[in-house]
Image: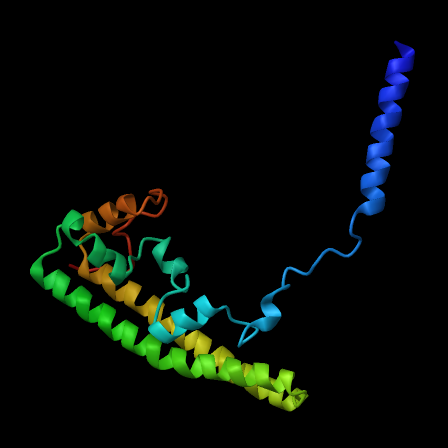
Length: 186
């Protein structure tokens, strides 16, 4: 019995030592494969989302705190019992947001492309980096604002009952009471 326990311990030790000796001390970077991207900082999906006005999660602060997004409200229009007026106002909100986000997304992608090119061509300086980042940050903030603003406006269009139902339909907990928005009037 002692021999078999000793043999098992030796075998396990050998396997462990073999695995440790052959482990890669320098695992690949999580960025591996991204060096072939046209714009290194953005995936092709990110670029497409910016160019088409998609949300990229920019409005989570609103969405997860009881301020619905118009695109989701339109998908749930029947379940929410939207009136014709509510639906029309929601469609206008969505189209306005989408247009604004697209008009900001295009220059944002171009600024990211310029930043990438400066690094690729080794022409980046502290000053050009600072200017580029200021412009990118400004555009990014404006895109996010476009997405968040419509959530505020959308909450004003729905009734408290619809807001509550929206939260349930989207699968969110009722931690944040829909309909308790400051300044909410119907």
